[in-house]
Amino acid sequence: MVLQLYGIPYSTCTQRVLITLHEKGVPYEINAVNLATGAHKDPEYMKKQPFGQVPCIDDDESRAICRYLAIKYADQGTPLIPPQSDLQATALFEQAASVEQADFDAFAGKLVFERVFKKKYSGLQPNEEMANNLQTELGKRLDVYDQILSRQPYANGSEFSLADIFHIPYGSLLAAADAGELIPERPHVKAWWDRITGRESWAKTKALNAK
Image 1 (cartoon, rainbow, N blue to C red):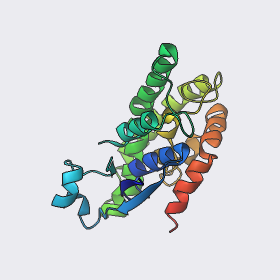
Image 2 (tube, rainbow, N blue to C red; image 1 turned 60 degrees about the horizontal axis):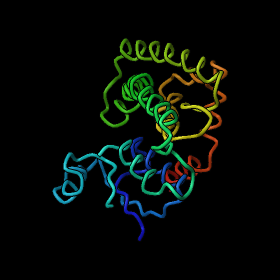
Image 3 (cartoon, rainbow, N blue to C red; image 1 turned 90 degrees about the vertical axis):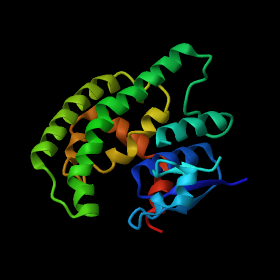
Image 4 (tube, rainbow, N blue to C red; image 1 turned 60 degrees about the vertical axis):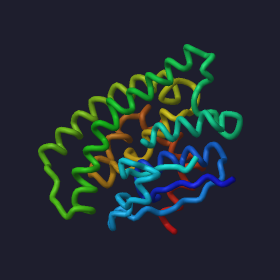
């Protein structure tokens, strides 16, 4: 049975799920949900996702969906979370996943919203003072990332995981948010970024936007 994914390919949250599906080799069909027309608030859609958010699957928040997929399809494709029996590896993964939310997404997501989404989808001008502060704070966090990544190739250690995937959608929009230098000016962050965005799963996800 082909998994049904409800979302839009250019949504950062949907992209996390798409990368995971491609890494796991799970067949899927994407059902476009037009946010501009309010389709995510349609009563029929809200039967699937009562908060009116994208994405959702037929089988919610994008990280939770990715975890679900990584566990359900543990025996196929790329292992994206450690086995629960490996307590040390699980602890390192959970730490890296927590860092992504608290020290990357909390700043990168808001920065992209201010400088990209606000104008593109609402016709509003960014709050540049807020955006500059977010960029400065994100830079400080990426300095710490650079130290961590000088000792290991991926966010949670030696293996590619969901913790890396979670960074990709907003990280890929930093250039559009006039903050593209944040990654390349930190050598270990750049090497890590090149590794995780050079994967076929991200290439396939980006290609969906061209259709």
